[in-house]
Image 1: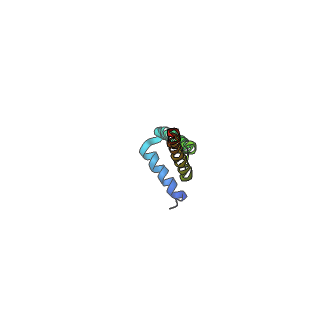
Image 2 (image 1 turned 135 degrees about the vertical axis):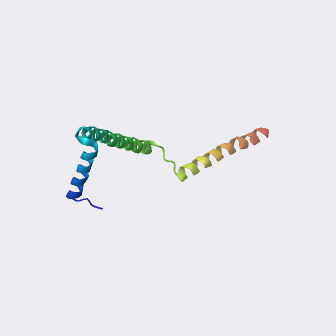
Image 3 (image 1 turned 120 degrees about the horizontal axis):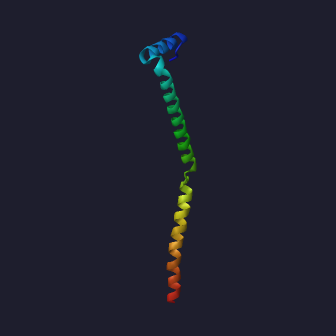
Length: 83
């Protein structure tokens, strides 16, 4: 859906009639701050996502295999001590 020049002019006239010439600068300032806050929030979210540790299934499998081996070794050592 594209807006032409006449549609934009009509929208601006309706906004001018509804809010008046004194309120339009306040509205544009509030709108600008809202857009800036939204962009800042999006950047923070992107940084948080990039900084979050990424665990792959392979690394988790390797860690679980290592922990299983570590748990198995002390039991083997205790058998040797009994002899």
